[in-house]
Length: 319
Image 1 (tube, rainbow, N blue to C red):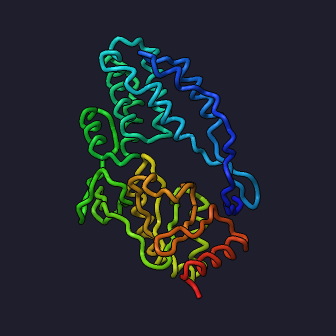
Image 2 (image 1 turned 90 degrees about the vertical axis):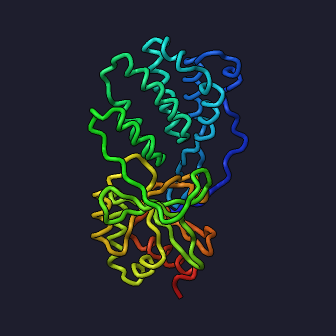
């Protein structure tokens, strides 16, 4: 994997979106043709261009488009009663559409709608249990452990993974935009919920994963550079991108085997607005809580080490 160092360029503001949500506003029901055609146009147009030293890259920014698609074309266009009289094909289409909207927006309300649709699918003695498993993982992905637990209890005949128990040493509001992390502790199937605070002076946020080969290569490189490893040990916080696969025991073993690395789970990626790319590995460099610069990707060439040393100096972590 080539080392990539991103620089933002201006998005083409002259881009005119080809879809028109007004066609959905007065629709009393779900217009599947309209919804699917709008979704196709969102997929075609909602990309933001970034440029790097090596090549052009594209970051997916279709979130706003799918928020609007849900708001104008889907939300409140059906009811529990409406689902009960919907034919199986349209019911599955509704599930497909909501699932796609959730993929981009991560809105809890969308997931609540999906749960209603899945319940109706199962009421009809549908033997396909994949929607339940997907919904369960989706609840985990937005860290809604309570609803994941309810779903597991409701469908206790399915081998769904255990839902972790959450401990907290501080009182945290559920509806604020705090940067909340889940730390792995020694107790099995328990996560410690904490609010994140930036330290004074320099700090590095590492977006990584033990399942990512470039992330593992970076860790190997770090161990061969004891001075930089010492800096990371004292000043870096390791975050895994938000998804539905927690894999608590394997992550705990990784942390135990790497004493200077402790991966944490993110509660909500949107509460980190300055992190615009959650690909692994990524490195964000802060000074007094303000983002100074970033490195995206890892390569074992000299450019990576040069840029790493330059940014550590820039945030006062080296002399």
